[in-house]
Image (cartoon, rainbow, N blue to C red; front, side):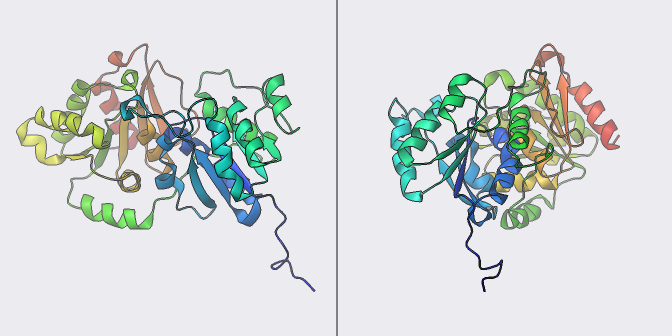
Length: 343
């Protein structure tokens, strides 16, 4: 007699694909991907995203991730290269790469599934679930519940992913985004940050797009103000932010510089670990701010006129204004220290 533990797993072999291409976008969706995995073969899914999400580093270690595959369609302009899956036939080539994996279901977190559906046809994936917001999408997708696209004041990606996951029965209520820190990265960063002054604040100085950048001058002012209180400050960014971090540090009063530490040489897993070890994260509307909240650190985002971030009211907070220039370092410092009880 066959027991439940040895019975064949009849759940579909599944991939999930993310349309949006940022690290923060991936963080918003990760818990919904996990819910899809719970209803998939072996409790795992194949995750398909753009390389710019850094999915292998952010969630590749999760037990519910079978593998991460990058759909390399639109590289950043700074990379000066053509994506492997660019062009009209790019999705067809991508589908040929997927075919040997014998996937049975594709769950598309997308309101533009056309290219993904082409890849599904080539790969022989019979079940194609997506938002189905238009008649054309519903024609291309497997018959299933559809959603209306979000039209409110908050960032749409999380709102639509939530509606979709609930409509499809993957979960029953909104889920606050969370990610897990890799233990090896946590150990490494704990040792690196141990000598720094506390409380310790991470300033997320990087920005994926120029219009999201709060500016060198304001980061100089904020870092100086925090350091003058005796607090520690991390200037946290990627390799492309090294020059900015050095410029900020050079403009700080020499008497305060020992409390300010640029960190732009970490890999993504180490940056995630660092964000889990600080007392607050303050920065631009980019992946760092969303990652900080997802690992449990109070995160303050300088939004300016950009859409609100409403998916984690406990850990993620925004500064809104008609323009980024209207948000002062003094305003940010006062609110952050007041809410954290660090005045």
